[in-house]
Length: 220
Ligand SMILES: Nc1ncnc2c1ncn2[C@@H]1O[C@H](COP(=O)(O)OP(=O)(O)OP(=O)(O)O)[C@@H](O)[C@H]1O
Image 1: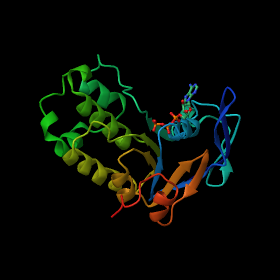
Image 2: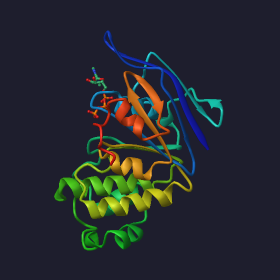
Image 3: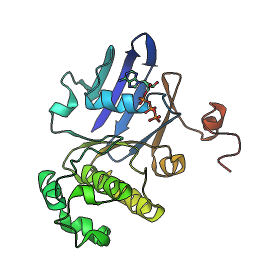
Image 4: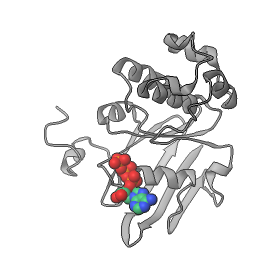
Protein backbone atom coordinates (compact mmCIF):
# COMPACT_ATOMS: atom_id res chain seq x y z
CA UNK A 1 0.00 0.00 0.00
CA UNK A 2 1.10 3.53 -0.78
CA UNK A 3 -0.48 6.63 0.73
CA UNK A 4 0.13 10.02 -0.83
CA UNK A 5 -1.09 13.42 0.21
CA UNK A 6 -0.55 16.59 -1.75
CA UNK A 7 -2.03 19.95 -2.74
CA UNK A 8 -2.80 20.68 0.90
CA UNK A 9 -3.97 24.17 1.69
CA UNK A 10 -4.76 24.79 5.34
CA UNK A 11 -5.72 28.14 6.82
CA UNK A 12 -6.82 29.04 10.32
CA UNK A 13 -8.73 32.28 9.83
CA UNK A 14 -6.43 34.34 7.61
CA UNK A 15 -3.28 32.52 8.71
CA UNK A 16 -1.85 30.13 6.16
CA UNK A 17 -0.46 27.04 7.89
CA UNK A 18 0.16 24.55 5.11
CA UNK A 19 0.54 24.86 1.37
CA UNK A 20 2.76 22.93 -0.96
CA UNK A 21 2.75 19.65 0.92
CA UNK A 22 3.64 16.38 -0.75
CA UNK A 23 4.18 13.29 1.35
CA UNK A 24 4.37 9.70 0.29
CA UNK A 25 4.25 6.85 2.80
CA UNK A 26 4.61 3.21 1.89
CA UNK A 27 4.05 -0.13 3.54
CA UNK A 28 7.36 -1.55 4.70
CA UNK A 29 8.80 1.89 5.33
CA UNK A 30 8.64 4.31 8.21
CA UNK A 31 7.92 7.86 7.17
CA UNK A 32 9.23 10.42 9.66
CA UNK A 33 7.99 14.00 9.84
CA UNK A 34 10.06 16.68 11.55
CA UNK A 35 9.47 20.38 12.03
CA UNK A 36 9.57 23.13 14.58
CA UNK A 37 6.72 23.94 16.99
CA UNK A 38 3.61 25.15 15.22
CA UNK A 39 4.79 24.28 11.70
CA UNK A 40 1.75 22.07 11.10
CA UNK A 41 2.80 18.46 11.81
CA UNK A 42 -0.25 17.64 13.93
CA UNK A 43 -2.50 19.42 11.45
CA UNK A 44 -1.08 17.32 8.63
CA UNK A 45 -1.73 14.07 10.52
CA UNK A 46 -5.27 15.21 11.33
CA UNK A 47 -5.87 16.04 7.67
CA UNK A 48 -4.73 12.54 6.69
CA UNK A 49 -6.93 11.00 9.42
CA UNK A 50 -9.80 13.16 8.23
CA UNK A 51 -10.78 15.01 11.41
CA UNK A 52 -9.39 18.33 10.16
CA UNK A 53 -10.76 19.65 6.90
CA UNK A 54 -8.41 21.98 5.01
CA UNK A 55 -9.45 24.25 2.16
CA UNK A 56 -7.98 21.72 -0.22
CA UNK A 57 -6.17 18.42 -0.18
CA UNK A 58 -5.73 15.31 -2.26
CA UNK A 59 -5.19 11.93 -0.67
CA UNK A 60 -4.47 8.88 -2.78
CA UNK A 61 -4.10 5.27 -1.75
CA UNK A 62 -2.45 3.12 -4.37
CA UNK A 63 -3.01 5.96 -6.84
CA UNK A 64 -6.76 6.11 -6.21
CA UNK A 65 -8.16 9.37 -4.81
CA UNK A 66 -9.83 8.93 -1.42
CA UNK A 67 -12.80 11.21 -0.93
CA UNK A 68 -14.20 9.77 2.32
CA UNK A 69 -12.44 10.75 5.57
CA UNK A 70 -10.07 7.88 6.35
CA UNK A 71 -11.25 7.64 9.95
CA UNK A 72 -14.58 6.44 8.57
CA UNK A 73 -12.81 3.43 7.10
CA UNK A 74 -11.15 0.48 8.82
CA UNK A 75 -7.85 1.41 7.24
CA UNK A 76 -6.39 3.82 9.74
CA UNK A 77 -5.44 4.27 13.40
CA UNK A 78 -4.21 7.55 14.86
CA UNK A 79 -2.27 8.22 18.04
CA UNK A 80 -3.09 11.85 18.85
CA UNK A 81 -0.73 14.11 20.73
CA UNK A 82 -2.81 13.91 23.91
CA UNK A 83 -4.30 10.98 25.86
CA UNK A 84 -7.34 9.61 24.09
CA UNK A 85 -8.23 6.57 26.21
CA UNK A 86 -10.80 7.30 28.95
CA UNK A 87 -9.23 6.93 32.40
CA UNK A 88 -12.14 4.89 33.75
CA UNK A 89 -11.44 1.94 31.45
CA UNK A 90 -9.55 -1.10 32.74
CA UNK A 91 -6.58 -2.30 30.71
CA UNK A 92 -8.34 -5.56 29.85
CA UNK A 93 -11.32 -3.61 28.48
CA UNK A 94 -9.02 -1.39 26.40
CA UNK A 95 -7.20 -4.37 24.91
CA UNK A 96 -10.53 -6.06 24.15
CA UNK A 97 -12.00 -2.94 22.57
CA UNK A 98 -9.02 -2.46 20.28
CA UNK A 99 -8.68 -6.21 19.70
CA UNK A 100 -5.04 -6.18 20.72
CA UNK A 101 -3.28 -9.16 22.29
CA UNK A 102 -2.59 -8.69 26.00
CA UNK A 103 -0.08 -11.54 26.23
CA UNK A 104 2.12 -10.07 23.55
CA UNK A 105 2.02 -6.75 25.40
CA UNK A 106 3.16 -8.18 28.72
CA UNK A 107 5.82 -10.27 27.02
CA UNK A 108 7.39 -6.95 25.98
CA UNK A 109 6.40 -4.85 28.97
CA UNK A 110 6.41 -7.30 31.88
CA UNK A 111 5.81 -4.72 34.56
CA UNK A 112 2.16 -4.49 33.50
CA UNK A 113 1.57 -8.24 34.04
CA UNK A 114 -0.40 -7.82 37.26
CA UNK A 115 -2.41 -4.80 36.17
CA UNK A 116 -4.92 -6.20 33.71
CA UNK A 117 -7.74 -5.11 36.01
CA UNK A 118 -6.34 -1.66 36.77
CA UNK A 119 -7.94 1.48 35.43
CA UNK A 120 -6.07 3.49 32.83
CA UNK A 121 -6.13 6.57 35.08
CA UNK A 122 -4.00 4.75 37.68
CA UNK A 123 -0.93 4.81 35.46
CA UNK A 124 1.68 7.53 35.14
CA UNK A 125 1.83 9.87 32.14
CA UNK A 126 4.62 7.86 30.53
CA UNK A 127 2.90 4.54 31.21
CA UNK A 128 -0.32 5.81 29.65
CA UNK A 129 1.58 7.03 26.60
CA UNK A 130 3.27 3.65 26.29
CA UNK A 131 -0.04 1.78 26.45
CA UNK A 132 -1.68 4.09 23.92
CA UNK A 133 1.24 3.89 21.52
CA UNK A 134 1.29 0.10 21.79
CA UNK A 135 -2.48 -0.17 21.24
CA UNK A 136 -2.40 1.99 18.12
CA UNK A 137 0.67 0.29 16.69
CA UNK A 138 -0.75 -3.18 17.16
CA UNK A 139 -4.28 -2.35 16.03
CA UNK A 140 -5.51 -4.16 13.00
CA UNK A 141 -5.19 -1.18 10.67
CA UNK A 142 -3.00 -0.75 7.62
CA UNK A 143 -2.20 2.92 8.13
CA UNK A 144 -0.78 4.10 11.45
CA UNK A 145 -0.30 7.75 12.38
CA UNK A 146 1.80 8.46 15.47
CA UNK A 147 1.91 11.99 16.87
CA UNK A 148 4.68 12.24 19.46
CA UNK A 149 4.70 8.59 20.55
CA UNK A 150 7.85 9.07 22.63
CA UNK A 151 6.78 11.97 24.81
CA UNK A 152 7.12 11.14 28.53
CA UNK A 153 8.53 7.70 27.76
CA UNK A 154 11.80 6.52 29.32
CA UNK A 155 14.77 5.60 27.08
CA UNK A 156 14.63 1.82 27.48
CA UNK A 157 10.94 1.74 26.69
CA UNK A 158 11.51 3.97 23.66
CA UNK A 159 13.99 1.43 22.35
CA UNK A 160 11.37 -1.33 22.72
CA UNK A 161 8.78 0.78 20.92
CA UNK A 162 11.24 1.44 18.11
CA UNK A 163 11.74 -2.31 17.71
CA UNK A 164 7.97 -2.78 17.68
CA UNK A 165 7.55 -0.07 15.04
CA UNK A 166 10.22 -1.74 12.90
CA UNK A 167 8.30 -5.04 13.17
CA UNK A 168 4.91 -3.50 12.49
CA UNK A 169 6.10 -1.61 9.43
CA UNK A 170 6.34 -4.90 7.53
CA UNK A 171 2.55 -4.89 7.20
CA UNK A 172 1.72 -1.25 7.70
CA UNK A 173 2.15 2.26 6.41
CA UNK A 174 3.56 4.16 9.39
CA UNK A 175 3.86 7.93 9.65
CA UNK A 176 5.49 9.26 12.79
CA UNK A 177 6.36 12.69 14.15
CA UNK A 178 8.18 13.59 17.35
CA UNK A 179 10.54 16.23 18.66
CA UNK A 180 12.98 13.49 19.64
CA UNK A 181 14.57 13.97 16.25
CA UNK A 182 17.40 11.49 16.78
CA UNK A 183 14.92 8.66 17.22
CA UNK A 184 12.91 9.81 14.20
CA UNK A 185 16.02 10.08 12.05
CA UNK A 186 17.27 6.73 13.30
CA UNK A 187 14.12 4.79 12.53
CA UNK A 188 12.78 6.52 9.39
CA UNK A 189 13.22 5.14 5.92
CA UNK A 190 11.92 8.40 4.48
CA UNK A 191 12.14 11.71 6.23
CA UNK A 192 10.24 14.94 5.62
CA UNK A 193 10.72 18.35 7.14
CA UNK A 194 7.83 20.79 7.29
CA UNK A 195 9.01 24.33 6.95
CA UNK A 196 7.11 27.49 6.01
CA UNK A 197 4.06 25.41 5.13
CA UNK A 198 5.96 23.20 2.68
CA UNK A 199 7.20 19.63 3.00
CA UNK A 200 10.76 18.88 2.05
CA UNK A 201 12.01 15.37 1.48
CA UNK A 202 15.28 15.11 3.37
CA UNK A 203 17.92 13.16 1.49
CA UNK A 204 20.96 14.54 3.26
CA UNK A 205 20.63 15.09 7.02
CA UNK A 206 22.88 18.12 6.74
CA UNK A 207 19.96 19.99 5.14
CA UNK A 208 18.19 19.84 8.52
CA UNK A 209 20.81 22.33 9.62
CA UNK A 210 20.63 24.32 6.39
CA UNK A 211 16.85 24.68 6.83
CA UNK A 212 17.49 25.88 10.36
CA UNK A 213 15.63 23.00 11.99
CA UNK A 214 18.78 21.94 13.85
CA UNK A 215 21.61 24.11 14.99
CA UNK A 216 24.94 23.65 13.22
CA UNK A 217 26.84 20.69 14.63
CA UNK A 218 23.82 18.97 16.22
CA UNK A 219 24.32 15.92 14.07
CA UNK A 220 27.99 15.40 14.94
N1 LIG B 1 -7.89 24.83 15.99
C1 LIG B 1 -7.00 25.78 15.68
N2 LIG B 1 -7.38 27.06 15.56
C2 LIG B 1 -6.50 28.03 15.21
N3 LIG B 1 -5.19 27.79 14.99
C3 LIG B 1 -4.75 26.52 15.11
C4 LIG B 1 -5.63 25.45 15.47
N4 LIG B 1 -4.92 24.30 15.51
C5 LIG B 1 -3.65 24.64 15.22
N5 LIG B 1 -3.55 25.95 14.97
C6 LIG B 1 -2.33 26.67 14.58
O1 LIG B 1 -1.80 26.00 13.45
C7 LIG B 1 -0.39 25.94 13.54
C8 LIG B 1 0.07 24.51 13.38
O2 LIG B 1 -0.34 23.76 14.53
P1 LIG B 1 0.06 22.23 14.70
O3 LIG B 1 -0.51 21.78 16.00
O4 LIG B 1 -0.30 21.49 13.49
O5 LIG B 1 1.66 22.36 14.81
P2 LIG B 1 2.76 21.27 15.19
O6 LIG B 1 3.80 21.31 14.14
O7 LIG B 1 2.12 19.95 15.45
O8 LIG B 1 3.33 21.89 16.55
P3 LIG B 1 3.98 21.21 17.85
O9 LIG B 1 5.25 20.57 17.41
O10 LIG B 1 4.21 22.37 18.74
O11 LIG B 1 2.98 20.23 18.40
C9 LIG B 1 0.00 26.62 14.85
O12 LIG B 1 0.38 27.93 14.57
C10 LIG B 1 -1.27 26.59 15.66
O13 LIG B 1 -1.35 27.71 16.50
